[in-house]
Length: 210
Ligand SMILES: [Zn+2]
Image (tube, rainbow, N blue to C red; front, side, top):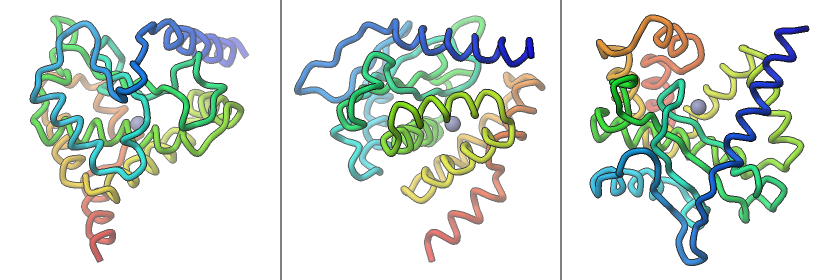
């Protein structure tokens, strides 16, 4: 029970943290790049390549933020917009900022791997856009409580990324992370447990090109 309460508390803290992001996106602009470190023009261009691979997401407001996170990427709706209609919400994609604590981070990823990572986070947004407030909350609770649900959701998200022409980028991301000398054992165990492996990525790429 204590473990359960701790997980709920962590989830609430996470939501509160997300709600504290105060950046506003101007009416005419859909993507804002922010965070602890600057985004290079090349990095922004790679994000736009990932965006262009999806239909119906170019008019979605997204804040892309470089910050310290326990993984390489995260996507959530901005809490204060969560009650709005899916297309009126703002979403936040966070990527790992580079600093002495995080040597394995967004800026060191190969260009294709950056596209694969942003593509995966955009696929989470595609999923959020099909859900109302209650469904998003239920997803968040199930994601933090059930390992099985987390694996299923990440598998589904990777499948959406691959079907939207980013299979090879996803594969490059996976291979780079799993071969990196900066990835510690705990992180690698998490990658192997929750995310699609290279055989599955290749199989879905083959099937979706038929
Ligand atoms: Zn994910």
